[in-house]
Image (cartoon, rainbow, N blue to C red; front, side):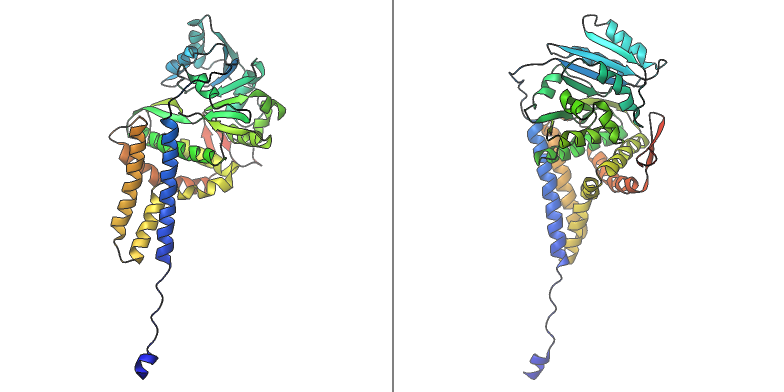
Length: 385
């Protein structure tokens, strides 16, 4: 009896496996909820608003000729909308894209389209500088700023106008990668279509909509009240500045239900890395508190947390990590199939590659400030700009 009383008490079980399991479960749940929100939006049957269809100005900055430039330039003239004007903007008089723009305008003589050439260096952002003359020449109360690589469907303006409500200051669409040719383009699709898009829909669902410069429909008075297009020079990225301008005036940013296509064609992994590294550095510089948790996105963090929990409970770490990854990638592939997104047999490997790149992109964004865009050296360091 004395020996029993003197025996040391059993040490309590460690709590870290429970915390790791809970962390894994939270990350998995957030990913699945974001995918469900994206699926719900993408599968919604589009019905054009029966309300008024106001005149719209479309300002499109052009710079150089890209593989799909001819198709994207032609698509802008096939939009089904009662009244809209097109303002092509080019910075340099020797840009080869001018010939394509002039040919597109000549092929549609009844369209209200103009080509504006010149530069207004109000910022270190060449795209914004290129848009200034178009914004100033725009005649209508609703203005679209659209990148040159957007493939616009006939219902382009109808879909942009559909989310507009009294409190709407800006409607945006992220890019939807299409026509991938090769593995690198599949990685780009995995980045854009089933990853970034789902998190943007999730952010909008909790009242934190962000602008993205690919397609932006402005209620013109919102930007004019902030000082005009020059207000977007406050940030290195015009979409980050747009987000802050809209929120500062008490308006909301809404997303279209289904993003508009950006044909990809051939890509290289170096180009994919460069593009997303640039975006990551811009997000870190303009919204650091929102960027910091991005290290937890993708399938890698919950798989690691699940493996750690399994090890603590005496289970198989490898099997648990594989199970978590299979669940998330299976759900992502189901999302792509259900919403008819571009999908090739390489897609699962592209998703894995993407998730292996995400931590490296996150670290790179905190360590590197400079990048080159369209041949121009830029930096996210405010004092240098």
